Length: 353
Image (cartoon, rainbow, N blue to C red; front, side, top):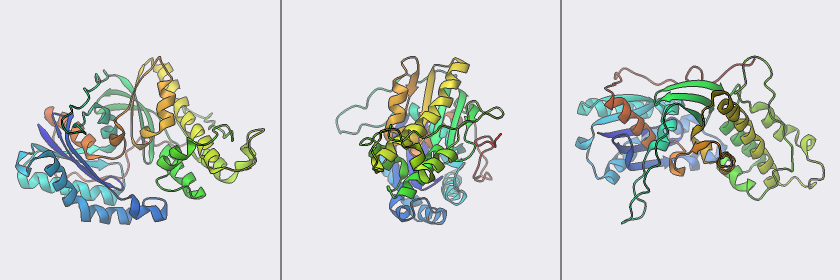
């Protein structure tokens, strides 16, 4: 079964073709970063307008790169939630129209579940004449999921490709939002996550001892919070300078110290979940899953099997949408063409206490 997947939940206009729920035949991502860089963040109106301008071109390119025509497609899928409502509606509407016009089955996909599925995909060869690396053995259910994408930071138990139990999530800012806001305040550049990760490699992560959140009220053992860390880095920098640290406020030291605290906040909740559940496999997904410190810290845990998607599938992409849709369709599921987009998903954020 060959599936066309469309992703437009935020500022990436993406489409891909995937066969049998795993083999990526094409993966096209048109980035809007240059249009949002001046604002150091995504402007929803600009994002939705660019999706409208680009969507048909990106879909056609994905078909061309796969060497296929519309008649070769067996099903269509698109992200329906969560995300920016205007952006979601562009991709969802295009996908429904494509499916309706060719009488194809259609699936509306949860964007976060698609990120979790990304590590099961096999990419095509990148060098002509060479075979792609054989895929790793897919993890058996259940396992722990770490979803760190855009406005979401979720630690969950995964019992099937479409069945998750949220154990922990953010009570305020998500980790990706914190990266962007710190980078914006100090003028590091955009997107904040990639810029801070690069700067941190030349910085002293012990120059500032930023605090980790103390979620001591209610049932928040696995939850995370980034509002306090963001405030400490932006407004209370001098209070957290380590004894004997260089008096200069080197941007690289700020980046490295912030990144260390941000990653440790995630890992504290994740490791607690691993200890409490006894699950030894962790599958990560989302843009922050590309962070080098997060990857290296998880690699240090020899008692845990940690699985990450390929770097090009960490950010938003159509391949993850097409991949998970293939499993839905093989099971016989269909979404009605009356389905619409929604900006949020219940349970992906929590109130405190």
